Amino acid sequence: MDIKSRLGYPCINVYLQETEGISTNRHMIQKTFEAQKSTNEGVSKLALQNVKDLVKIIQWNERNGIKFFRMSSNIFPWMSEYEITSLPDWPLIEKNLQLAGKLAMQYGQRLTYHPGPFNVLASQSSFTARKTRRELNQHSQIMDVMGLPATPWAKINIHVNTTQGGKEAAAERFCTQFEKLDPNTKARLVVENDDKASQYSVADLYELIYKKIGIPITFDVHHHKFCSGNMSHEDAAKLAVSTWPSDVPAAFHFASTINHEEPEKMARAHADWIYDEVTDYGTGAWIMCECKAKEVAIQKYIREGVTHSDYVEKYELIKS
DNA sequence: CATGGTCAAGTGGCA
DNA sequence: TGCCACTTGACCATG
Figure 1 (cartoon, helix red, strand yellow):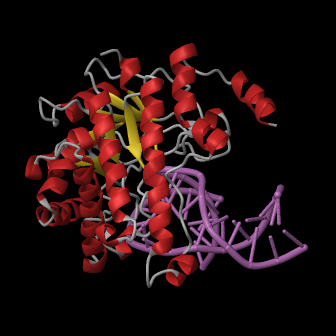
Figure 2 (figure 1 turned 90 degrees about the vertical axis):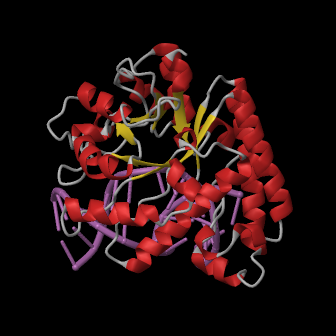
């Protein structure tokens, strides 16, 4: 399978959103959520629209040769506050989730999750850790309804997200909490290297997480620039790939630095476009491209190769 | 109806 | 101390 068929994008299809309003990110602010809480009819309607549009995005991906897509955690707004199966529109929501999953499997598409940075399994706060367990289990529950494999093919990707008490102690809390997750959540959970030197490099994750609980490591090519653990990109990539089961292809994350577009901003922020060659170091890994221009960035890269800096000015003209 | 201020959550780094 | 950045900009009150 050519590397171009293994590129993916996260959460938003820019084209469908701008031309047809197709989106899986419909949300509501807290005040609105509270106002509808007695029936949850508001969130139910949003979730229904979101899952219907998920089907459309999967179909669009099939028509456009894209096999890799990260689902938005916002499909069910305020999910941690209710049981998804008790929403008034659940029967219809369930049908659409089943259809989305069936189509994805039929097309050979890989669907994944990346729950947000508020999920801190290793938190010193038992409240936060418990809430995180619940939310991770809910992500997995949705994948179960969709009929996606209980393997890291359908990965649920998180960071350790804290170093409080020291990296070793936090990693230990992570492993302890991991054991309390639902079986299918455990089967899907993978852990990603961080973008700050004080946090977890691929080598750290290998030693402190993989060796204890055996979950795979997602290699984030961009983050590795800021937290290398003294490993080259290629060595880190290969070490990460070695943690995946032999029958499930590994996943990488990729982004170029925003400094190509806005030199004054923090280097670890992500660019709209792809300015660096995307490589899997010969490993066969699938690569999630976290570019702000989403699927448009992938299509442009596949068509034209890396973006050159003069494109930014032209793009600004097109937009205006 | 367009737009700008504001928005659940945890954590760490930086001005 | 307060903002930015990260999984994803989207909601909604105001003019």
